[in-house]
Image 1 (cartoon, rainbow, N blue to C red):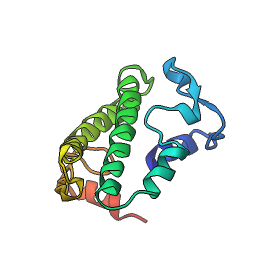
Image 2 (cartoon, rainbow, N blue to C red):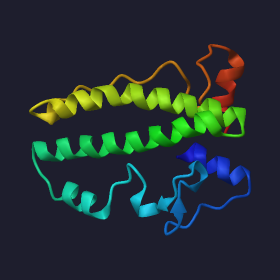
Image 3 (spheres, helix red, strand yellow):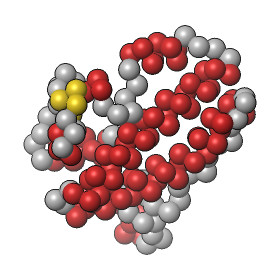
Image 4 (tube, rainbow, N blue to C red):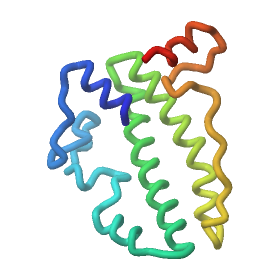
Length: 145
């Protein structure tokens, strides 16, 4: 989210009003509260009110829905964004979210969701979105305050 907010900031855009219509950019306008993958207030209340293994299972279910909504938007951006950099970032987001979603879905299918293994981090790309590089130039990019 930080990178996307920075993208808006760099273009002189403010963070939009949460009461707005979203996803119009992909010809699927919906109210913010109906955005695919966004946990509703009722979802969060149910999650916070759960206990035991149900807490873990509910968390996994919310994350699966959240990532699915994000992948849906990123797939559209990967195909339709005007900026080549944004299309590349969107393709990376789709791949990373799908990779991270596999162990989450597997854990949600287990009888005791709390026994889920910790997913391995994606090491094919840097957090900046670029392929990992062992060059000093790439390393300096991350050490600059």
